[in-house]
Length: 383
Ligand SMILES: [Zn+2]
Image (cartoon, rainbow, N blue to C red; front, side):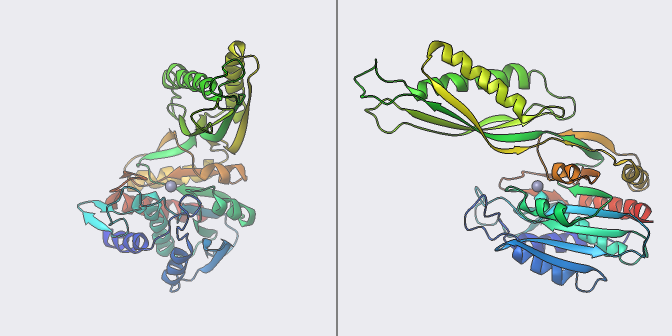
């Protein structure tokens, strides 16, 4: 292998220096356009077709294709070019810093190290004639609502994909949780503060619902974690309600994030919350409430991936000294969108830490290992 730690440090450092905060999360964030421009230039010496696809102003997918000689399958490597915001960083989020095996910086691990791994693997493979096509997609908006991968799967014809997100070798993610962003809306009745017989307190009713959700989290989700995907995700996110000190609140809205395990649907979670509302209504029959699903993302379950898995396992035996370990995740990734578009998908990535937090770091040596693994596996898979 000729990809070195220096190659990884050079490319990831350049990517960290380019701000690509997802504007969906942080208004004013730069998006991915500048990263795409930089990468198109980085790829210009290689025999690859490069498409910079502007999905919305400043929001771009970079899709690079290394054409094979024909008759082979197409493999896609997907990593995301956007990051979360700077929150909590002193002022050095965009200043990459190397300390031992760690490269620190915003997005170093999530997911610029993975963009770099995919591109370095492509550069390595560009020297060998292969039958199949290799596609590297550095996509937009994974930290938002995944407009990048949603666009990609409309255009891409691929026989298999590896989604790259920071994780840890030799783990290979074959399934992960889905999730929903849900509003619970409680309607009470406004009344003067001195008229308790007229008012219905929407906030008190909501407190009762929150208590029940918390009890479900402790007694069900925490007590019975999924063997692969861990504890079902649940937390409250936002709460709004009431108008002023002197008035019974007629409206309270709670925003939650809640997970689904493989085999479950978000409708199952909605039905559980509706049952909680029915319980609360026993004490307050006039209460009206509804559950509104704002975003639904299905769980990921790899299917049809066996040919690629066999190549990855053989590559792991050669480069890591043992096979990969089928694993799960309690987070959601674009792998679900790729798989649900009919592309057999697996997920892996290099070790890192402090994701979405100050001092995010990437393991440099493990990024080199990911490149080695991808190169050997792709060489066999693409023939
Ligand atoms: Zn990520």
